[in-house]
Structure formats: structure tokens, C-alpha cells
Image (cartoon, rainbow, N blue to C red; front, side, top):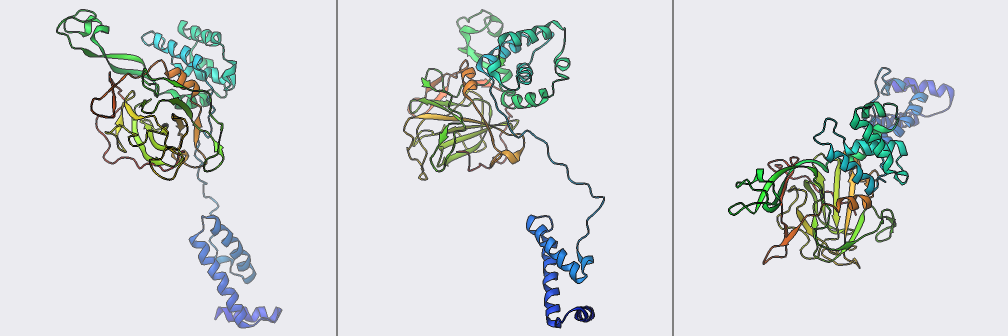
Length: 409
């Protein structure tokens, strides 16, 4: 047998028994077999290295899997790994006004384009923001003197800021249908043809609008207070950063869907208590609402997979959380924890690669659009007074609701 010939040759060099040779070669063959199964894993690579050394000593190199010289290595996926969103409320408001004011003009200015231009110019640092900087570029674009493509062609990081800021803001401005009181409607929308309405006209009508279709997370008329608390220390469970924005208010305050989307997470989390996670339809944004009310945290019609319109009442402010026991009030001051996670690749959804951005300035900007709610008699619920219809919302819900993640404190 082959192993007897090899043993004979080895014995001419050193006094090794046949049993030792057989045992050694059996170990090497076992390592080879193991490495075949785990070839593309770290343990497999380690086993392969040891097997290679032993095989070389025994002349068994040909049994190792051969490297393919012409094999093309797989390309690494390229996507944004980090976003520091420092755009101020003032900058967002100025860019938004330019967008709305030019929506029917020959040159329509996109508010995110304007903010991305300044982001590239400031290196992402909006403490340098000056309204005159935006005015200057906006007027050049409106006059036709230049285009955004021409302005940014030599800006190394414009494309990054456009994608990053777009991930935060692209779903918030656009065309939608809004329900408004007949008393505020132009005559062209009313059966009577009389501006402001006349006897026999409906109480409300639907009109098509272009503008801000995202809402503040707190219903209109309900008081709250907040400050810039993103990144401050938290110690429950483990030492970590606060990756959201707290809005202090009264227990039972209606919580509003900021953007249209679908319910991706719903239930108890020991950090966030009763919480809701709503994903935008383009899947780039995950809105996280936590510490909801004890006993009655959510609107009764919601379940995982439910579609929501921006402005809908989705839950109620409370102080649940910081406990493994469900339905526990362990938060000292009632507040809504509102978080916004950006997702450029699904691998970022959970784990060490999550991207959470500061919402302080964003919430200030959204406060101009607060959804009005009214108490539903005989229940613990509130409902919105005036509806909206976002074209992003599909007509029918998905056949199977998305599976809810367990993390996101």
C-alpha cells in the first residue's frame, strides 16, 4: 500500500514506527476533510493552514483544494456607513420655501439639492450656515445662470451629501391630497362655486397640494418640551449613548406618524417599553416611537404590517420601559422617545452598523405641521380631524406583514 512505501522512506531518515505514520496521516486527512467543509470560513481557513503544513511534510499537497488563479473576487457592496445630520431648522425652512415657491416655475428648486450643496460647501458643518449663502445659489439657479449639475460637478462630496440628506428628507415634501374645512376652500372646489362655502356644501373637501406632507410627532394643541439630547449618556442595562430625541409631555398625548409607512415593529422592549417602529415605503427610514402609555399604548387598529398615513394617530405618550417585565412604568418623566434610523443596506438594520441621526432640528422644522386630533367618545383613543392621502401609500396592505426586529432600545 502507498502508506507502507511512504513509511519505508520515512524510516530511512528517522526511526518512526508504521503505527505513528498511519496515525499522523490519518490526522492530516481529517484536517483536510474538515477544511473542505469549512473552506470559506475563518475556522476552515485556519484548519487549511495547519493541514497544508502537515500535508507538505508528508507529500500530500496535491490533495489540498487548489486556488483558482483566474477567479474574480466578489465586489464589496458600496453604501454609506455613517451620517452626521447637522442641518439646522432655519436652513431646512429656507430650502423648503424655495422648493414650494418654485414648484410651478420653469426652474423648480429641490430643497434637498440646496441643502446638499451647502452641506458639501460646509463640510457637513451647518454651524457655518448663512441664509445669504443659500439665497445666492438659489437666485443663480432660478435665473438660469447655472444649473445644480454645473455647480456641483467639481464638488467631491456633493453626491454623498445628496444621498445622505435625501435619506433623511426625500419623503417629506411632495404632492398629496389634503382634507380641509369647506370654509377654507376656493370656490372651484365647492359645489356652490362660492369661496369659503355656502349652505348645502359639505363640511370638508379634498384638495391637491404640494408642500410638507410630514408631521410633528406630537399632536396639535398638546404641550411638550425638548432640548438637544442626542448622544448623551444612558446607563440602564449597559452604558450607551442616547440615539434619539425625547419630547416631554403629558401621559396620553396622541403620538403622530411623522411619515407614511408600514408598522415593522410593535410590542415590548425592555429599554423602550411599549414601542412602535414604522418603516418608510422607500425603506430608507425607520421611525422609532418608544415609552408609550401603560395599558393602552397603541391605536387599536394597528398591527405589524399595517399601513399608516402621515398625520395618523398611532399611539400615546407614556413612561413605560427600563424593565424586563411588560407593561411596567419605570421612566420617571413621561416623554416620547423619537428616533430616526437611516438604512442604506439591510445589513445596517440591526447590530453595530446602525445609523441613527439627531432629530432635534428636524422636530423643530416639523412643528409647523401638527396633526389635529379629537377624542373618540367612549374610548381611550384620539383620531385625526383632517385626513391626507399620500400617493406613496399602496392601495392594499402586504400579504404577509414584515417580521418585527427585537432590538432598537
